[in-house]
Amino acid sequence: MTTPSGPTRNLVRVFTQRFSSTPRGARLARQLALVELHDWGVPEGTALSDGAGLLVAELAANAVTHGRVPGRDFEVRMVLLAGVLRVEVSDARRERRPQVRPAEYQAESGYGLRIVDGLAVDWGVMDRVVGKTVWAELARPAVT
Image (tube, rainbow, N blue to C red):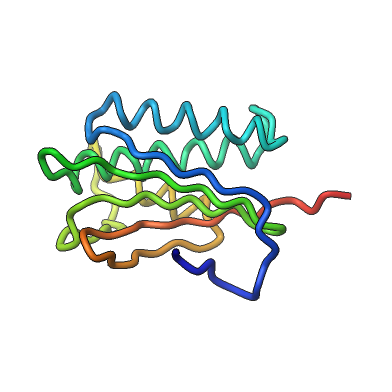
């Protein structure tokens, strides 16, 4: 299990699912993540749900595009804690590390990690036995 950054937090919910390393798998990952968040009491259209949907979409698309190994799935894991939602996407290619690239005039790609970097309060990469996990955290508004 990966350890969320920052001080110890109370675990609220966990969702883990594997998907085929295809564009269809990436779309399904986003859709199921939003359904799961709704089941956890985070309705669609809220800042947390919208942000999580974007993070899952971008990280899953990167896993399919840059982390794909034929015959291997990618995995999405969401951990809802007292103050943060952590999104993790794991793929089978450890040697292909994500990097925020400099902006290129009229580039048609390369914006995904800029979106992640702009949305997330923190993000990073961890090695696994096979592959890597890219994680990002969104601040969760305090429930009153």
